[in-house]
Image (cartoon, rainbow, N blue to C red; front, side, top):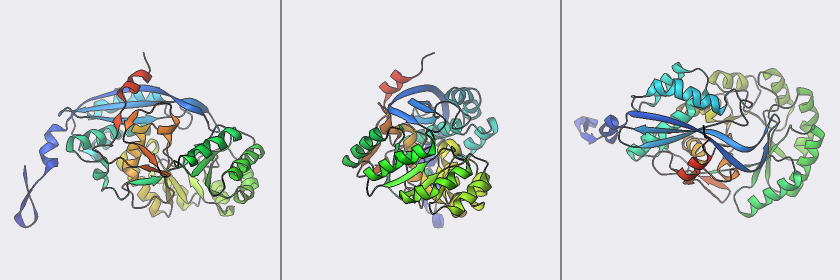
Length: 391
């Protein structure tokens, strides 16, 4: 198809040529339970397998795209469970966009928002599948739809979250030796604070020169945080994630004013207005980006822009997504002008068998952003079939 160009010239528009072939023909969902390599603990739950919903979107040209919606141990980290994600996609979100053009990203996102409020993980899973399918159909990486990539690799953290210091030190040293990770996030809050400090001290002593981030997962009170901030500073912690539960903006701001260590906002801010309230209220100087919070790839990039406009630095968060969900995040992260704190997409390595068989690579302490069409990863269809929840 010829499209008018500058000064009356014409150029070929591959997008125009393909629009009629990008109709959304079907959207299928499946719940997948993927065993993890070890126990992963948070302050409010622990898991030995990661459950997610995989979305398969098919277009009229025969192209198929995949997306992932993750949770942690059911509706504990947020209100969505995998059962709810699947039901809401099948019943409300898919019917709202079937027959639409996959390239109409904003219109499809708006249609899903009208069909179901919140349900961020569910919307993000469908949205990611559409980006994957559209990119494959046009032979373009998904990041191209988001302004294009400005980086091809991101320094990646590894989370230590078993609660057993000996095991965690051994695990971290193995990651260092393999040149996969040299920055580590320590999960706190499932032990008494004094016990957590002793565990943290052992890990920090065993990993000299490594950056340590601590994630409290909402487990502390303001008083507990005030008491232990000096100890965290002594141990060289560089970032503290979500010490108090969401809603305690003023209390978190008082902690931030006392702390020589930056505070990162995670569960306290899903929406743009929540990001603004936390940032302008002084409750965090770093923001954790997650598709399960923003509800879609363009919305995730918008969240990054809002946080930056409020003066926050950016961190690429995860919810233990497999390679499918990691690839969707990386497509967005690759397009961000700044990502000061790197990312933590270690999910493909904490599951025993990843759902992506190719495209996700860890090397020289970085995760390398897939560069192929769509999300740039190849789905492990055998693993997907074997670990799909039956019935």
